[in-house]
Length: 325
Image (cartoon, rainbow, N blue to C red; front, side):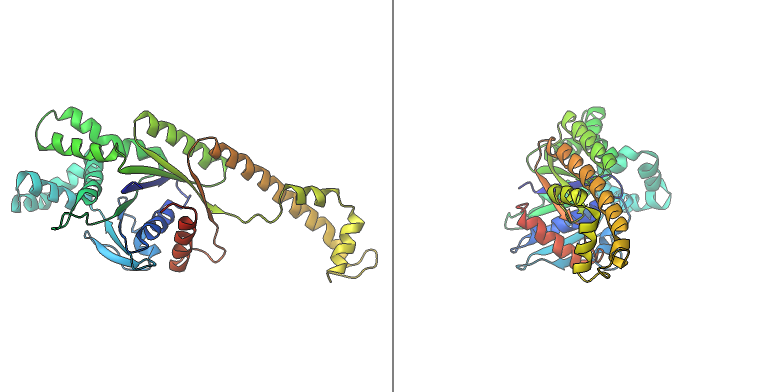
C-alpha cells in the first residue's frame, strides 16, 4: 500500500469525506496516519467536529485497534517561511518579509510557488523519520484539489525543477517528484454514479497517466441502495394493474373493492417505479464506464442520517471490508 494517498474528485462528490474515511481506515490496528488539507477550507475540522486546525500536526481521532489520525491544514505563507528557514536560514528576515507582504505576494501572484509548498510539505511528512529510523507516519492522506486541477498541482515541481537548473529549489523539486512519481504515491479519484463526474474522472485519469503520475483507485461515493434489481423492475412493469391493486390491498393498503384506496395507489407507485428504473439504468451505465477504466473500484453508501463523525467511522469500516487497507 502506497504511503502517500492523494484523494481528488469533482466538486460535490465528497472527496474530503472520502479522504477522512480513508485516513481512519488506514490507521486501524495501531497505525498512524496524517490527514493533510491543502485548500484552506477547514473541511477536515468540520468532519471531525473539532476546532479549526492550526498550522501544526494535531491528533484528531483514534481509529479502531488503537491507531491514530493526525491532521494538518497547510498554510502556504507559513510553509514558505519554513522553506526559507530550511534552505536559506533567513529566520527573522523571513518574518520581516511576511510583515512587508512579500510572502503573501509570492504565494498569491505565483500559484506555482503555492503548489510547490503544499506538495513539498506533504512529501516531507511522508519521508520524515524518528530518532530510531522509523517513519513518523505509516500513511499520509492528502485531501487534494479537484480533478480538473490535480495533475498540474502534483506535476508543478517538474516544471520548477526544469526552470531552476541548480540549487536548493531544484533539489527540493526533484525530491518531491521522486516521491510523487514513485510507488510511494497513489492518486485516488472520487466520483458519483452520474454522467458528469464519471466523465471528469475518466479525463482526470487520462491526464494523470499522461503525466506519469501513479493512479490508484476509483471511489464511488454516496451510492444509493438497490431497492429493485432489473428482474424485479420487469415484473413490476408486466404485472396487471388489478393484480397490483390486490397485492396492495392484501398488504393492508386500502380496501379490496374496485376504486378503493389500493386502486388509487397503483398509478403513483408505477410512476415511482419508472423513475427508479431510469435512475437504475443510468447508474448501471456509469458503473460499466468506471469498470472499463481498469482500476480497482470501491463503492461507499449514501448514509441516510447524513454525514457526521459516526458516519466517517462507518465508511472507514466499509473501506476496510473492501480491502483498501
